[in-house]
Length: 217
Image 1: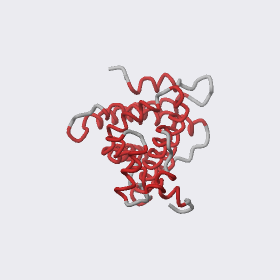
Image 2 (image 1 turned 60 degrees about the horizontal axis):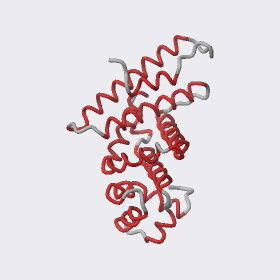
Image 3 (image 1 turned 30 degrees about the horizontal axis):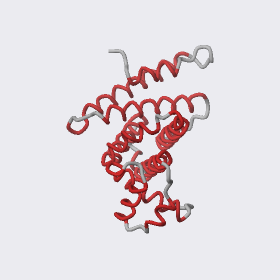
């Protein structure tokens, strides 16, 4: 938490617990108060540190998930993994981290899907995908920089939607879904690499992303 202000530090400490309490209290000030009480944080400071409106509370919570992921996936943890394994492990870590807040995740997605919140949803999705790729060691700065993050955002969102309704032991259905989608991405990247770099010949990302949630059988 270096270079963070005191309020930013409190916000970061609160973030994941607020998500857990949002299961019962919704994305409200009550969830912030409950999280502060559990962590022994002064409620006045907690209210000052954490956003007031639901959509920005959700953004702060997502930032907390990103921070937990970055803290967990140190170079030593991922050194022996291939890039694809790193990405899968990060997505799965995010699911496990947000597991105690699963019903709050459902409401969070509904709130972010509101027309006025779509720009925020896109920004947070992009930031999370960017964090995953950076941790995985991606250094692309060209077209691939953007396509990788856009595709990963789609994979992660589709996996979240599957996970929300998954009642299997150990989320085996979600794991199988994630593996299929990552397999689709790997085949897509291989095809794209062989297809050339011409703007006229690049495959349609929008069409590919649309197939991630409802792929052909």
